[in-house]
Image (cartoon, rainbow, N blue to C red; front, side):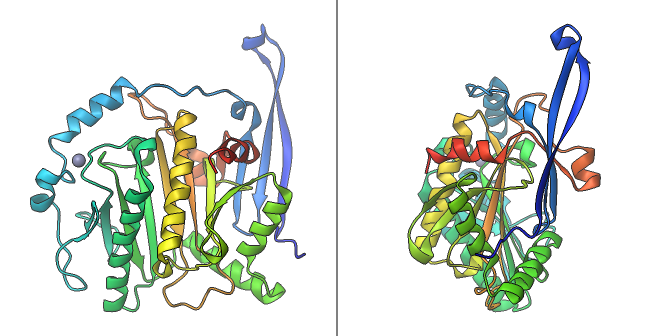
Length: 352
Ligand SMILES: [Zn+2]
């Protein structure tokens, strides 16, 4: 079997000091540095921090307060959505409604085709309250938007489905929603993934992502589970070198682009997200990001590329939460992580 590693490396560094937590006796912290040459991700994991037990807490007072305070002014709530949100024009007229989900243009876009898609009329949903059907309807509405854009403008062919939940994840609006972009060019990280996937295929005749799934399943350490069967299945893995805490990758066995998803793939992906969110809820997480890494629409990339998503937890929302993204991530492209991927996989497995 071809080794998919493309130079996955790890080594442990040890920091030693006299700790006031031990009466100034000698203490040491192990820092595991990981590099995945395929994705280009480099991170360092503080093993001691990852072993801290985090208790699930009740919903914080500050969160209840925030939900109450923002409810009456919310543009995404049904009383104001019709009058306060923009409408599509050109590739589609008006707003796209699927089930309880509604898609409309982002009022302050950072892309030529940039939509907001709500999940429902609920102003707030906690992690365990996102039903698979809500997520599936959101995806269906998102795909209607993506298809309409691409039919109108063939040059717009890289769709991205992005979900920021609560302010620590950079959501400025509490009301649950995703942002969908259809881009002419892949983002820098996606470009690297597509290029390396093509190179891997040229060198080995294999799809890197399918090989990765098989190797991880055989190794067992980071394999979490799978929802669905055959080409419709979606596989959950903990990433070897994550970009955030509690990171889970969801890999589609039989799709390279978001635009190609069939009904079963949509439902299986939604179900995977529901399960990850249940585990997050149990771990005390209330804020997270999800994004997809999609091949191009009708790009013929199925042989060498697989659509996948990453989901990471963010600091728990409370009045004075501390961001988890500092100088290392913003300036040095190195990710400081406090959860061991193999521990994440262990905790996630019972939800799959
Ligand atoms: Zn609302």
